Length: 638
Image 1 (cartoon, rainbow, N blue to C red):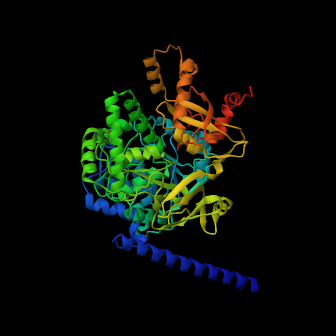
Image 2: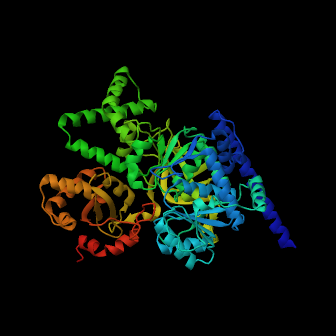
Image 3: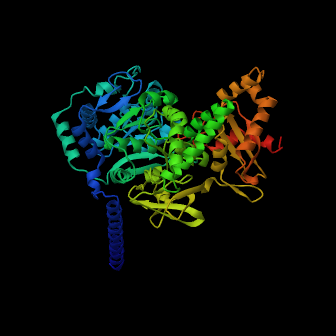
């Protein structure tokens, strides 16, 4: 009895602490929203399904979803049709046996059907489990079995074949639904997504959906997103409706995205970044355009002319490199004009940010530079880009300055799957080069031991699915441990310094942040991918995958003769060319950080080879294992 009373007292004390913390966070939120001149609304009013239903009623015949270069009817879907499709999906899934909180996998490249299945499942109160369409069979088997998914939505022929194999290996799978009608179904029990939309349902099912839609339980799971797993098995991050509702409410205070704005879904919807942004864009009445093939992004930008799209640093690095390559080969007069325009743009950017004094002379110079240079660069991005959210890794200071200078705002942010992406972000009126911006209004950040970034707030995950020990290890007194190191400046801007677990220590006792070095080198138009080696070594080396298109053009211009790509990489002039490039790129790095030797590789790191994750993070252990001979040779061990 005494033990019971003691336990009860502890529970009461925890409840009091929770209540006190809730009131404190609520007061902070109300204050922050008041400063922005916006009314503070309860999270229930930001339930994603409710927000989307509101847009259906208001926007009706305006376009909600558009499939880039896709056949009808998925080339263009109105808001009214979007509402009808998602309601039908919800009803049919319930008819097929989907209970509340049952899991369903979506394994497809970006397309309007992806979001229709997503929202249909949300209406039926199911839980979406995205799987990267490029995932290996073993990865997919693990995720389906761990989540005990009942349904699989597959995209094209390749994903359908994998889904069939998954059904054989995963006892929980009951139904397979295919987006692409050109796929030949091998089982009569499988169905096309389009046919699903034509199926009739019972009155009992219609009533059941109505019952499920009546209650908006913010504590129900919204999705399970499995981490990419650079080490060990992926972990299922549990994100609920409360997390998503808070995400929408917070982004309203930070970003000028309005109904009618066009967003291009270029990054995979399987990732929390694009999925979260697509959700927000639709909740705010935007038109979402789906790019099935990311290799077509250059064409899509000029045709779609989006107001925004989510990007990763590598995307911006490629644009920057392509521009630099053209400048290098241009006449000296154009080179000088470009250099002048970049100087003007960066000075004007500092003026607009309130960090420098403007002048009439600078304004006139900027107008001229905009007409001669910036407008042409902006046209590459479609000509009406309002801003580009950027995440996934740190963006080089020089590249960030380039885009800000030409009037194509890049808003770098910081976040993880476990925090529903955004923890901090730059805004149009607060862009600090090199930083990831200020903390979101309903999130708190503090710097812990070893400069680790700790986070808590309403967008932080519930925990890892079926992994109570991993969940406990991920938190410290209520703060989520990110594994990233950084610091906050006097204005509350967050700067990421390195990934704690990825720090490399040389045999000389020097610590190296590999992403910093790789980021500097990755700016080169002749380098596609790079992985440095330094841990327990006495100097830094690198495995480099060249950008073969640029390299072959350079080799042709130099009159080099070669029989194969491998012979080209071994050519003395090519090796010397890369040596000179590395020397120029690394001048800002400390001596001990600089790459001393390198090996050029004939094939890229790919998800198929298991050398990178679907989010393009390097699987270093796998890379080092595959290229052990080349690495040892750079240290004189062969």
